[in-house]
Image (cartoon, rainbow, N blue to C red; front, side):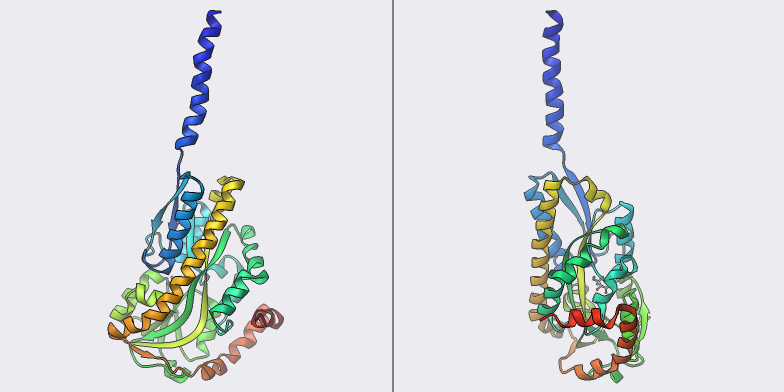
Length: 326
Ligand code: PAF
């Protein structure tokens, strides 16, 4: 009888011990991205994080690392593979070095406009690409967005490829871009983004190319005089999660993460559009000369030799399949 009395409180304690940590446990996820918290990457990441926290009743929350605080995009992808970082909102620029199936989306002049790019990526082609990540030690939750890339430099206005010829321009660590830009006569200099502001300031490179939201957020107007609306390549982005983290998330919570990623992506795309609508005036005010009348036909003509190589590498049919999406 005495033994039974002693058992009761022990059982109660055991139940409490299992319930209490479950009620209190909170996993903090590290998420990194290249630009400031109020940039397109920050807006998308914040919506994602808020939705995850709400949808999991606070069992998950994020700690955000904006401004490349965890390193360049390539380094952060490596950290996801190792499991030392949980999440990354990144351009596809360096992703093709890890997931070769991704390289095709960075072809210059592949996408006509935002509607075309978003339709391809949200459709069968883009969703099939997301499914390729796990076999390369990564998990992709959603396509986010960086935006159409524009050229900036310290030397002259660029209207046609011959104006760009001879300029030493920082590019992403992306062979597809570099092969394309060489056909414009540019001297591509691959460099991680965190080093770029200093390189522009010191004149190590004459220019760079990035979407308006990045040019605004990184304050490139302080170190670059000329902006040309070349729209030469659409820069897709992705919300990636470490497989180590993903494996620990329950099936029900995985659904929350995926829904949150869609909402984050929508917010990020909206911010890209808003920045483009309002950004040029801001950049002009900050002292940049904006060239709007770029000879797009001349750039498309110049890129043709690069497309011979792209067709060999990716298949002309695969490129056409993307271009044909209406
Ligand atoms: O130029 C780059 O490397 C990328 O566009 C950036 C700024 C890191 C955003 O993804």
